[in-house]
Length: 154
Image (cartoon, rainbow, N blue to C red; front, side):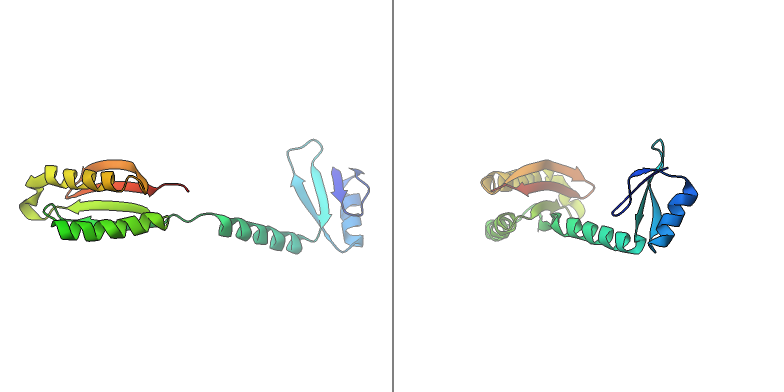
């Protein structure tokens, strides 16, 4: 087995020699790459190694961007004032960098007005064009017609 470490001469050792060296230094013998020929082992403090690995993973996780999805709900016969009010909210969400899920909910027999719902969503997409781009065009799923808009990169 090939042995590496901080204050160890890199070389090929037998298992007993490697274990003895690790024991002398009061550290652990850890197998790094078992598939290598010969297998590579390292003498180190295993608990400290695990702690540093968790710390590294946590730092990477905190840097990852979290996708926030904000929803805006319309009815097929949404008034112009209500539409403008919700459009302002949608604008604000996109400026903040959140994805927008706009949907028209059809209650009861209002499913007859599918075209109105689609026109409403496409109108919204066109008016929010400078703030975000359409990720998914209006699509009917059951009683909901959904559309996704993602913010534009600055």
